[in-house]
Image (cartoon, rainbow, N blue to C red; front, side, top):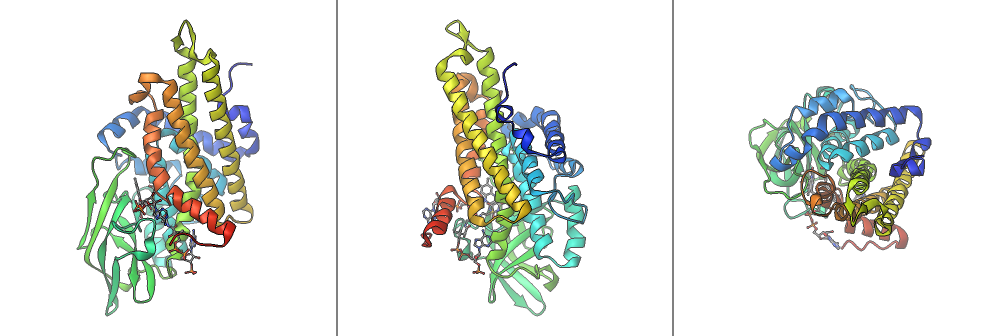
Length: 388
Ligand code: TGC
Ligand code: FAD
């Protein structure tokens, strides 16, 4: 037998059914043929062309785990595997799909009225419309309960004022799910981005997640009809429940960045000769490769376990914290270690590991920083909330 790829060594495919393997293979083909040839340029020029949304829609990955309204209604594991394959290309691709499907579409699907669902979900599923999700503010990231964005009633209308920060797809979006404090607690609103008083300002000079658009959203007395409120969203638990969906995708997604880094390092080590022998033939290199394969495999088993739980009986926020914390942390360590195997070549955009490592710095921070997930696990273990 010839050399094995890291997840082949684990026998990962034997744990998946035929549909799950097909979905993963289809997304992988699209990523490798359509996106990877462009990703270096997009990363360098800090762009993600808007047209890609429709291609993701045609591929069927936007809101793929939701039912009805043009969504595929797949199981959670298939959604996770799609995230893994997208993030093998770049975390920016998985981010786009996470925000569209798990944050924008999920918030409407779970908390919206029938009219809101009919109006937005089919267009968001096809990629004809783009959504974003505004929870974080300049002064309130880890602690969204302090949000200052206010929604006040004016007759049957709502008036929204405030600023949201670090919002993925903010400048691309047709509709923003905006979370605001009201006299009755936190509420969610669907804000069409052409509403007077709404502005999105692109954030420049990012060193991470460059093939992804990140924006500030300014709401300056934005007047919305009463029908813009998400009728079933009551309290901070509503936006936090959307985060569970996106965090679940990241549990799988981060492994894609790790797998691609490791495969790149394996190929490089096989062909690079140092001191008259392939780099892959040295024990120090093999130790790195074996340790990384072990962590990738353990991360995959953890992700799959959480996916099966989610499909069969449900998964708790603390269980998702275990997966997000471990898999992003290990993916980042793997991407950095792979970069060492590439030597100087590893610092250019010709090879993926450092691009993945840079991206994973954002992934470590968004959707709950690693510290927030440590504290969430700590609270589950001790009963003491140490956030404040
Ligand atoms: P706490 O008192 O714990 O909870 C308030 C209410 O929320 C409920 N809850 C949850 N419900 C569902 N899922 C969860 N994960 C939940 N966590 C809490 C809780 O039961 C309670 O409900 P009720 O009915 O009793 O009121 O709230 P806290 O203020 O103490 O905060 C807890 C903490 C720190 C864990 C939470 O604030 C948190 O998760 N902070 C991190 C914020 C975060 O992750 N932001 C992400 C923004 S979106 C993003 O980053 C997108 S990146 C996308 C991309 O590009 O891919
Ligand atoms: P802070 O909350 O200020 O944290 C700073 C540091 O303090 C962190 O290390 C944190 O872990 C630590 N810390 C905070 N509290 C405690 C504590 N109690 N104990 C110990 N340590 C603590 N948000 C959205 O709403 N929508 C989006 O689409 C979105 N996209 C993003 C895209 C990118 C590229 C990035 C980088 C961020 C995005 N975010 C988005 C924002 C993201 O969710 C926040 O950055 C994140 O929640 C952390 O908030 P913060 O940056 O304000 O850090």
